[in-house]
Image (cartoon, rainbow, N blue to C red):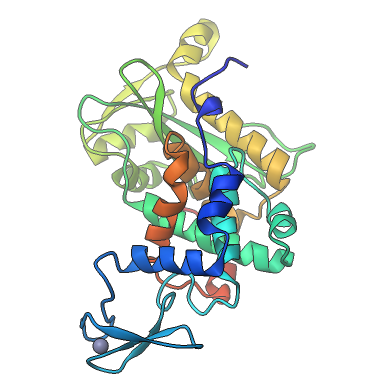
Length: 318
Ligand SMILES: [Zn+2]
């Protein structure tokens, strides 16, 4: 494999990570600064003065006496875990290029797999929320779009479109004017129907985008999102054209499949959106590995709590 920029992108190595976030006090100070960058603000009355209740890790508003913990109302809500574990989890999830399984995360954090699973799913929810309203493309921008199936039975199943037991996904890769991949969107869909693609495009694509796809008819629906559709008819002798036009979207689909096979082995379809969100989030920030923790924690502090009950609930694909 050719050397590329990402493989040599300097991440935050373990030593400086520990120097920055190795103790509970350091993590607490960092979260305080990110939650209240201009100093404490009471979530109930908006007052800006508080006193710290010693021994209970609570802040009491000097105006209305409301007591609030640093993590209340955020994705870290009522956690019993040390903050150092959360920081370590953010580190491991964001710095691993291929993703990390909950089993491996449990081993590295020294917690049970259920705990690791919950931590990972909550952080993935933050990534999902963050990527939700962050479309790719725009005027004069080019996006490659393709469909694929993930998971399902590996042996004896039908291949390709219409295969049973597999989850249909749509992948969109924005390319730069130099033809390099820029940003990425991956979504599970209910099927490759025009109505589904129309709904998806309105979320994923900024108006004015030129969308390159194969001839699958549902992709004409991107025009409903104010995009231009540039179908490339594939098959037959057009094999070479196909490879050039869809190079990045095909590479990405291959990487997702490898990641799931190699790292997670299998993913229940209902949990797929949060796994895809981790892949997408990491890819879209692959040149900014050093400030991944700051950025993820910042959004996590602004993401509402996600109880275990909700994490376990089935999601509706897209
Ligand atoms: Zn108050």
